[in-house]
Image 1 (cartoon, protein in one colour):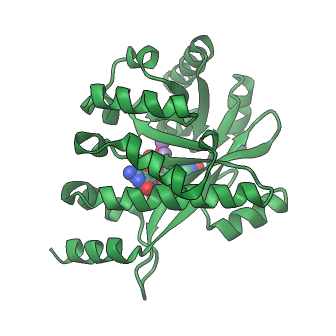
Image 2 (tube, helix red, strand yellow):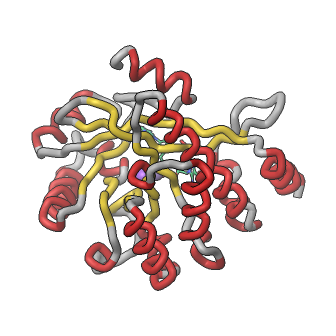
Image 3 (cartoon, protein in one colour):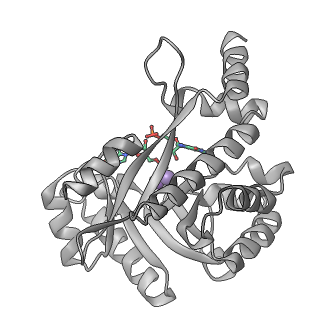
Length: 253
Ligand code: G
Ligand code: G
Ligand code: MN
Ligand code: NA
């Protein structure tokens, strides 16, 4: 199709940019990490969001070279920030499709080697569904990465199809509570109960928990009352270019 040809050409020309959304440590109030989010910078067009091209990238296999680019670019940026006195952990989203036929361990190691990033500054975000698709391959590759110092986060936690047993079998460092629960804090006692249960699960398993999709002060206050320690959302900052991120952090907002 036309879109597929355009995307293939964009991958060849590396016509993408990464935007970065801050992750806040609520005790110190500081930005401790960022999530890298890909956008297609089509010449003469507005930025195209991943919802419009990721499904096609996954279907066609273009997700592989795209991820090679994303990992390298995110690691390059994080190494640059660190060198310039702004050490930030960077989180990269990984599609579950990658584990079908690729050595994800090698893709990540290559990006680290090429950029010289300290692996402790790299985090990988995977959904529960991505993990159960290829549990053995994922487990082996993620364990090797964790041994190098890379950390693994379960994204959209609470909305996938996985059982909870993998939390004890895989080297999970952090759970990212899906924004659907956060959006219902004021309206659903069920969602409040689930958030509290996830925070307790993390606490008892020694896994960090971050809440995502915080848009309002009342949501933040409630999460702080529950002892939630990390947060992300439009309330703190939208995904922005590296230049705008640095300006926001330096102005302390
Ligand atoms: O801001 P936003 O519209 O960017 O992101 C939409 C979705 O795209 C999210 O589910 C996010 O995880 C996914 N996404 C963003 N960047 C990447 C990427 O580089 N790789 C993968 N696999 N998914 C991404
Ligand atoms: O699936 P994943 O969690 O990786 O995707 C993150 C997505 O959530 C991105 O599209 C990002 O732009 C979006 N996002 C981040 N913070 C907020 C928020 O506070 N509200 C809403 N509606 N979306 C958000
Ligand atoms: Mn994510
Ligand atoms: Na998420």
